[in-house]
Image 1 (tube, rainbow, N blue to C red):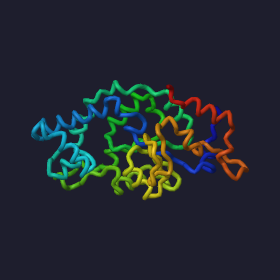
Image 2 (cartoon, rainbow, N blue to C red):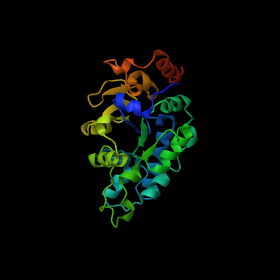
Image 3 (cartoon, helix red, strand yellow):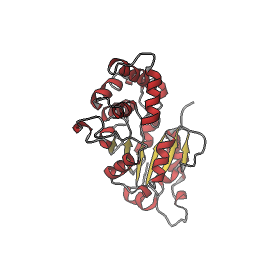
Length: 266
């Protein structure tokens, strides 16, 4: 397929870069990953922190609600939890074999000429493993993850010294944009979490809410599934012409090919 070059797309598409969340954006964690994660966190709270087994599920929910993650909450409460140990326990035991290769998604991502970046709250090992299982690990230019947003955590002498930063924290978002070296006004941010999307919007990013069917004021676009990207945001692929509306400059055969390649099978 004759896709436009990065240079021509930069001059015509509203986006120079696309930032993708990972879990529940590029794949659904409902296949068993989310369930496994909840169990692993509960087990960590019991085995490593000494909480009663019957209290672990409600504590996990409260920590996520108030701090954004169980790890962030535990450290904020004074528990000296090593981030690598935590991630090894809660992510290292996940049933990654449940994540299957997604050829539709791979074709879609490879058709996008702009820079593509993973922006996830998860640790790097989880991101790499998930991308490999999906068969798309070579489709991205960069991974921005837990370690990116918390570079000094390993140097802390107390749990309070470096509070954990995660989306939707504005500080975390600003770190990500700085590391990615992107212009937010020329970047598209795709995430399944409304709060994350709202934070991106506040920083000037174009935003897309994935996995939802209802319009949101925080999102410029809403996608029921990431496979619908070409249908919902065709301007990603626009090419410069003399037309006043660059979205019509893509040939019918090219756009039909993209839509056919990314249609979700029944």
